[in-house]
Length: 268
Image 1 (tube, one colour):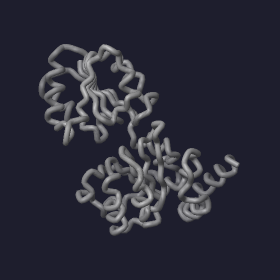
Image 2: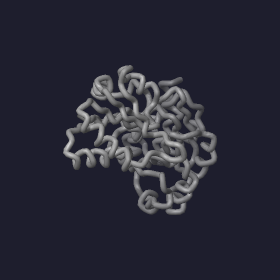
Image 3: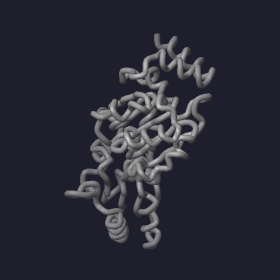
Image 4: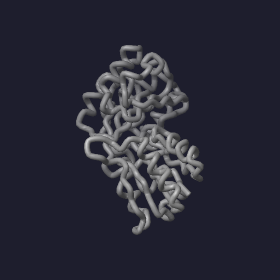
């Protein structure tokens, strides 16, 4: 049996119970570079570990990974394909599942805690919030030139970009050029949910410069919900002061203003 297991966003304690069971039963673990050592340490000591996230000069092509999984699946052993986050959220788990299905092999998908919401939450950013954001749009920022900036700029609620850190300046410029308010709160969360987590918040116009010293992996969050981070994340100094948070909250929603006021009073 082959199990496509989501390892979660980084913190080993965010691995699901089912994922842990499959990992501890695995005879072979095929993992990528986004899976932290803390999660890998949960595998049994005698398991064969195959790292497909590292290769001199370039990552291992997905086609070769598919072939490897098919070969391993035919061995009759318990195989875990361990992927950062969730296998079906920018993890190419769908491609691997199709390859296994085409080969006539039994497999299962064990969903993982996705970085979509877990990483922003770890930085005090709720991707949805009553009266402020009822929609979340996710996109891959791997190729900024391929993004539909007109649609993204008009999308209400929160924008979450995977693999968007390297091209953040271009992404921000594209959104602003197509009508997104340059004063929209934005955040970059690097190494989210781990002990190395670092968060930078700024306006959309300034987020690329403000976060330039961070290192990937990093998630980009854009939207009014980021303005709540100074109140909800005690670990990171606020780049947007409370007064600015209140001004944006007042302009956007009475209910958000009330929530922010309550949170401010509660934390005094």
